Length: 510
Ligand SMILES: Cc1cc2nc3c(=O)[nH]c(=O)nc-3n(C[C@H](O)[C@H](O)[C@H](O)COP(=O)(O)OP(=O)(O)OC[C@H]3O[C@@H](n4cnc5c(N)ncnc54)[C@H](O)[C@@H]3O)c2cc1C
Image (cartoon, rainbow, N blue to C red; front, side, top):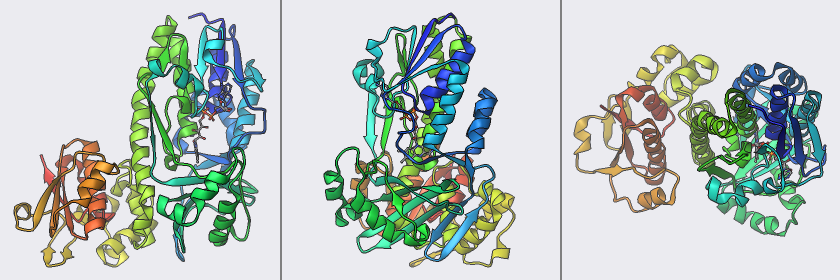
């Protein structure tokens, strides 16, 4: 297909990367990036790039990935609760300053022959080009202007987050909560340069209000940072910060917005990156998704005879992967929103709950990749010595074989006897709504008193994960025994849920 002019709205990672790839595959085309901001004035601190993302970027364009890796900072992961810390060697986790990433991508776009026009805000309707790539970010005006065609749906998370940084490099990435007189704040922090770390801090609405941050958020003018919150959090996280300061950059409390669109393209205009979709930052994926969209768009344009076919192909290829990640991200967001409820768990067991939170990693896989954390975590779950925990291949069955004493109930293993289903005191509960929705909260609020709740529902994977997540909420809200039906094919998922205290017992179906 011959394209003479390609206009890219937005010089974020998605737009810059798409511009470079498209210019390389269409050297005759005039490719222009319009960016409303000016270089080096970008918001944000560091962003993480997982090893799988690096592999995908290497396959698409080795040269620019080398440039990114050279400017990035490697780190391993850890979680600390109180004085207890666990570490996770993670191989190839990288983080890079957003401003650095953009300057690397600007250079590679220009090297390929892309024209970068800064300080120019444009709209899709005001541009005459064969192809308009709208990479204009989470607040995309293109998506709003063409809302009928794109059909956007925006949902907000329950919790609040604040994105800031500090001017020293943490020794490793860390997840750590602190309890203050107002409630719990959790930091996700990681180094991204020899003298910089990102600090992303979360809390729940009640804590946020009690600390007076609803007022400070309201009173912080647009474009400025909420200094009151930053000073408070600097004090609260002083140990992790090792006495360093927290720095804002237009830093304010926000609720995470998940964007979904019914369609990503109309006529010659296509949405890419955050403009089309977002996924919660706790799976570190927005930059990755935007850059992988660029790869898919370039490939689809190259492989198609006309633009309509190309844009349809791009969407058909990307949508399943994006929706899969959004499902994982939604679960991860809900897990973090309820993180303070799990602080009584030993930190190694908490790490198992963290790794298995979204259904992506199973407990046996985690035991294989990080035995130094998983083994003590499983020993804590079972109340046995670490050397009693078997090899990763046998871990799932071993978890299900652990006995349980709960009130008057004694069970030899974690698979519920069928007699319990119809026993007096057992209440069946059908879970049909997502676990973090008001419907499920209402359902939990009016549950009749019971000694055991037996959760049922559809047997597909997502519904099962929902049921296990709802189980955790019911377990914490009622203190009763919770059993969930799980399809026999999801045995390792069931074992992970039991070891993470989402449910007490499972019953295999099908
Ligand atoms: C708290 C937080 C933490 C995050 N952490 C990570 C992480 O660790 N890893 C990760 O991969 N991602 C992370 N992300 C996500 C990441 O920042 C975004 O997903 C990513 O930047 C999306 O890239 P993009 O190119 O689609 O949009 P953006 O980076 O938002 O770029 C859009 C650009 O378009 C410009 N623009 C907008 N409208 C116009 C217009 N009309 N004309 C011209 N220019 C315009 C804007 O100025 C902006 O530069 C995080 C996000 C948040 C909120």
